[in-house]
Length: 337
Image (cartoon, rainbow, N blue to C red):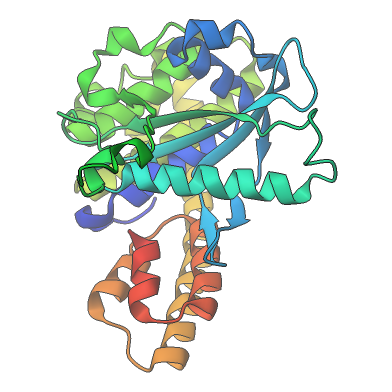
């Protein structure tokens, strides 16, 4: 399976898993039922959640990428009223998080405004914002980063500072029992939690047990493949790995007497998938670095190391676009943060 990843950049592994699993709107609906404001939930038509593109042009004419964005209509729709859900994942505290979310929201609103023909009509409304950050760092956040803390405190200007907030789901601060009852959601959140608190290897043979409640065998196999790939990447970064025997032990709570036979197939599929993705990612990394070298002659070692550590093919393709349009290496480095 996949090789060891540099520990400094392990967040890329978690980011890729987060974007892949929460691209499934059914899982997003379960997450919102668990963590969104009940007053808001009563108004949302969760059966009509739609994922929208995370690629858009900000005010600085540079492509920006939010982790995940969804549109959610209201049960009782009035005109263009609805909710835009920005779902962001973080594995470490960033002081600029509030500013980052505000940039995303402003760019989304701006694009919706420009694309609407009757935008000056009284029937046109920008979607209401729902902003949730899922954090799975090594330890709980003692305080959430805010936009207000980044703005200079000058007497007489206080009323102009946006009171900008967001919902924080801090996995390190939650017990496994607090993660929810929906089987798949609980497994996903527990994986993200244990992947960064160092306990994944200790519970690897129990973590998939809730999936036994899913009766659709095809669906179960899909999620097991995705989960095993993630587990293997996380454990490989810790100097461990899943062998075929380990794979059998992990899936035994679900497949029981068939686990040994199933493990052989799953292990081979995941290994092949890892090789194919590794090849594609390697080519994308090469493209990014080649473009930077042509434009700026020499690429600093820290930037090259960060690019080579990325395991998200979508993000690498976006980086290639940034490499072609950025005005300086400093500007490119900001995108890597």
